[in-house]
Image (cartoon, rainbow, N blue to C red; front, side):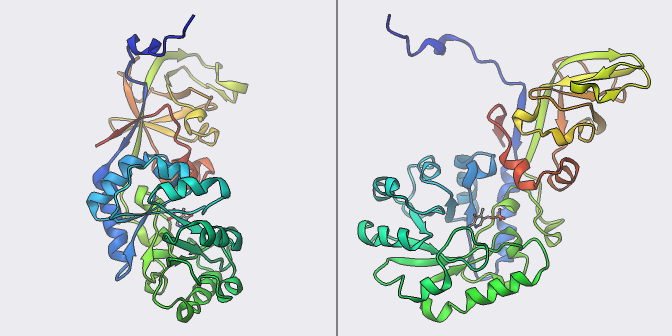
Length: 358
Ligand SMILES: *Cc1c(COP(=O)(O)O)cnc(C)c1O
């Protein structure tokens, strides 16, 4: 029997019980602030990992409206998700080109960031003179050609107008920052007119010495506070809302959740939320996170499960099945509470969130 491909099209889809609200105006404001902090340098945007979990297509649309023209993704699959790509914008693919990427790279107007001598050779031979960028390693030891390799005529015959490097510890005050900056700056004479870029979100607030020709913020666009200097300037972009699936009363001595890590010392009122670690609400929030209802704090009780989280609602007695609560996801504090980085908190936000851009 043939399988009906539209089998599901007749089944109504209910609105989901989990929302991610994305504030476009805050995203645009954050980019404008980072662009202003970047001084004379152009300011791009890292939209890899689905714009840190928020939705890359929508993020690009908002950022283009705000004035951004230069974007970075990690892989060709991420680049293709942004198709069709406008000729007047730049899209850089940070992981460069493998052999199997070449047909895609030639069919699409995104540029590889070449990371190794091998990738440079591949693009020189098969890239048909199309534009590319090059990553040089100055201490991260992750991706990039070495300073010595770059000095050996590596860029000859390559249509490369952007050379980038990446800071390992820009969110800390350590000598490595100045060392990387100096090693990068020393390349300036041999790069003759090509644009240079080293600063991520944290690097931008290290000061103008780090701006070069182009900055590449990611985290702070999406509300992350990379360094203290950004506090009070970067606005939160993502908010989480979860629906109450059930109300329940527990008695003194009752335990809650896996492994019964919480035992009530008095009768309590709980609400069970449609949210768990499979959504990126990590187990580190167990007994530490909190939801909010009309400004009232509802502490997380017991362990976060895969799909469910219990909160105490004694302080919000009117709350009932079907109601919505906001789950506090203020990145800097949520990171401290959960033991996850702000990056992990954003990129972990799962597919079960309905993303609402406003
Ligand atoms: C992810 C990334 C960025 C953005 O970094 P943030 O710390 O999120 O601002 C910039 N450059 C490169 C090479 C990256 O991989």
